[in-house]
Length: 37
Image (cartoon, rainbow, N blue to C red; front, side, top):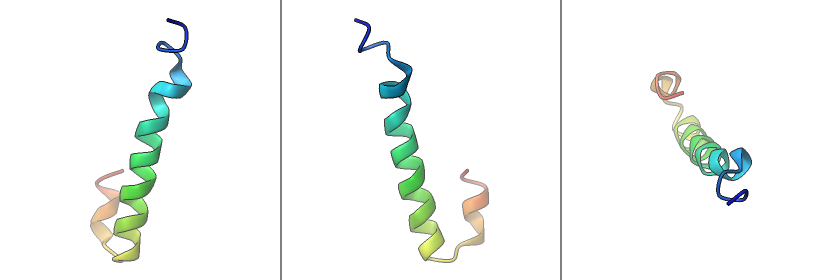
């Protein structure tokens, strides 16, 4: 249960998806990426 409640495992997917979206929009030079942060 401690693993399921681990904040690290809970936030990792969010960080990974955030970095993926940010890098994707950044490659497109889209100024709208600031609104998606």
